[in-house]
Length: 102
Image (cartoon, rainbow, N blue to C red; front, side, top):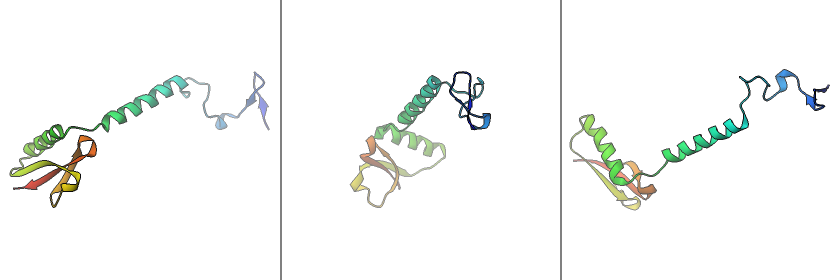
């Protein structure tokens, strides 16, 4: 059974509504759009490619902080990795950072 609301439109029971008229349950469309845009922009910024020298310095700082000694981090082309352990990619995915113990 469909009941008519005050404006002649269909009136759904409380448990079948997507948004209720109370302010604490409804999210305005503009706020939802802004939230969605902000999330997309933060994901894009997070996935932004880093230059090899910057990423290499960050990884080296973390290894030095942990007391790791005798290693070499090198940026190589994707097809020239060889037996080295790949620890990251840089320059938009065109190069790999490799880690080798000396």
